[in-house]
Structures are given as structure tokens and as C-alpha cells.
Image 1 (cartoon, helix red, strand yellow):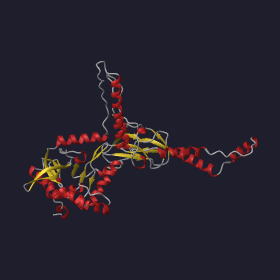
Image 2: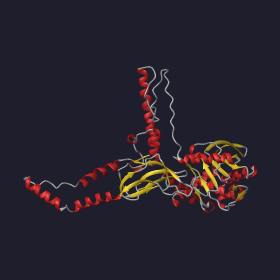
Image 3: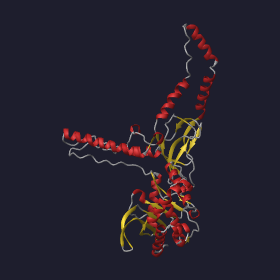
Image 4: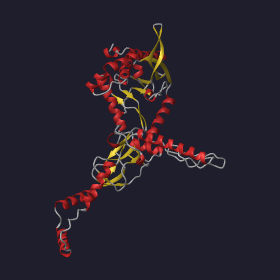
Length: 449
């Protein structure tokens, strides 16, 4: 019997939420197969089976457990005995089995001998393999989305590679259900005027039965905040209450950066195996500006200012369970290709719940890109104990006055939120201007001048 324990994920983390079991109690599991998903105040992790066997769940999902707690056991010996017994039967029947077969043949005469019975283990294996091969692949994030929206995944058609159900498949299923519900509601309304009851409108929850006045009853759903969401809330509240935050804005002409990406993007991808994105430009520009304004890269510790001679840049990534900020260490030493690879690796870790505590610690400056979600302008909140955060936004074609002429240019609003206790307005505004100059003239950061 092997105990399955909640692993240590960092010195400051003492407990975790058992978010989801991916296997059922009594189900057979294989070594390295993901069994459950846990959430701590910083990361979401998947825990795999340490060996083959039968899973015995001790703690149900939704419970908060201490680090090191035993949440399940795996009956390793039972699984091995079945396998070994099946192998023995396939290789050579036991003596008692032969005697029983000979006696049966003597008692039951016939023109031809009956075929030897297939061992029960062989019969049971084949259907399970076929069933597993036809079963769609479901990631934890997709399963969580389906549970939130009340979607039965057995009715969702997979379109992802290898029969994988994607989040887009779930959303499409909801849209189709909503259209079908609206059509049924319209048909019922035409046949029998009056309030329609029990019709679902695609959100996974049935409409409440109307009251006598014809209006549905109001319902409130209570759901406990996940440890990650609680941690995010605490840090944001701490930033608002304990810093003097102020935000300055500017806009950047993205023409030159876009031209470079179009001109060299394909060669860059073929040589380095990653796409040339905009984030690497902004990381390079930030390092360039941080060298000129060390206060923006510093922390306040009581009455002392801690200056850093290194540049650990945090990149905010929106995950299914909350925002995380993995850190690219020593960004000043990395080229465009290394930066892009680091971003891609972190994005995969977030998607696969493999992010570690060490990936989130030690950042000195943060960049967040709301533009990927369509944000035109926002005021980002500091990531304590850091003193500044840069916010990127979506690129939008706008008419601009250039050399006395009105021309259409791809423009991006950028925002710098900073702690006014240690960074003056002049420093913040000039810092953001350096970012603007570097992006509009990317040759400067490439030549490091």
C-alpha cells in the first residue's frame, strides 16, 4: 500500500485545496498518470500516481488539507497479483485447471473438443482499451470550465488534436444550446402566451419557476474563493493600502516594431523555433530604461531602499484559476530568442499546472499585457514589494499628425503605475518616455545605445 501525500511546494505554503480528483475511488491507475489537482495560495499543481495499482481516496475534493497529509492510498500489491496471475494463465495453465478440463472432456462427448476458455483477465482488458481509446481527452482547465457552466462533457464534440476537448468546444456547445433553447422558448410562447418555465438559456442553470407575478425567483450561489484567488485579493488589497500608487500614461507608435516582425519574423521562427512576439521588445526596452532609473527597479523596506543590480522581469499571465506572474531571471543577459522561449515555456507550465513556487519568486519589475484581451487602457496595480509595473494594451489604428500630415498609425497606449513614495513624477514620466523611444526605434535596444 503506497500513501499519496500532498507535496511541499514552498516554505511559506502550509496547506492546499484539493480541487479535483481526475480518477474515481477504486479505479485502476498507472504510474505517472495524473490523479488530482491541488491549489495553493500561489500555484495550481497536478499530482501523479507513484506506481500502478488501485486508487483508494481518503479525502474528497473540495477539502483543505495540510502539506504532507495523506489524501489517498494505492493498492500496489493487488494490481501486481492480478497482472502476474493473468500472465501465468496465458503462459501455462495450472495443474488443477488441466485436470478439470480433461474431466470435462470425458464427461461431455462430442465430435469436436470445445475451445479452451479464455482467462477472465484477457476478456476484461480488451473492452477497456477500446473504451479508453474512444474516450475524449479532457484537461483540468476544460473540466473546471464545464463544471462552472454546468456542461455535460459527454455531449460535447471534440475538435482538438488527438480527440481533445478544448475550451472552444465547450463554449460552442453552450452557444448551440442557447440558440436551441431560445428557439424552443419562442415556439412555446407562440403556442401558449404567458411566462415560460424551466427553459435553459445556455448558462448551464435552469431558470427558476416564476412567482405568481410572473417573475423568476432570485437565487444567489455561494462559492468559496480558491486559495489562489484569496492570495491575489490579499496582495492587491495590500498594494492599495500600503503604497502611494500613481499612474502615468503615454502612447507608442508600433510601426517600426511591426515592420521588423514582418520582415524577419519567419526567419526568426525557422532559426530559433519560436515566434517573435512583442513582449520581448518591451522586456528589452524595460531593462534599457531600468538601468537609467534604478529607483524603478528598487524596493522599499521600512526606511531603507533596496537597489538591485539585476533585472528579474515578471510577465503576468492570465490563467483559468487566476493571474500568475512567472519571473524571467537576469533578463539583461538574454536575447530576443531566449526571452521568447522563456515566455512560451511559462505559458505551457501554466496551462499544464506545472508552475513551481520558484518560478514566481524574486521579480524586481512586472509587465502585464491587457491588450491580448482587448483592453484599450487601464491602470495596473503594483505587485508588492516591487515599485512599478508596466501595462501594455491593444494596438489600434488611429489618425496621427506626423510632419504636418494626418496619417494612420498602429498605436498602443502604455501605463506605468509606480510607488510615489520613492519614485518622483519626473522619473516615472521620463522612464515611460524611454520605453516609448526604444519601441519606436528598436535599433536602440538592439544596438544597446
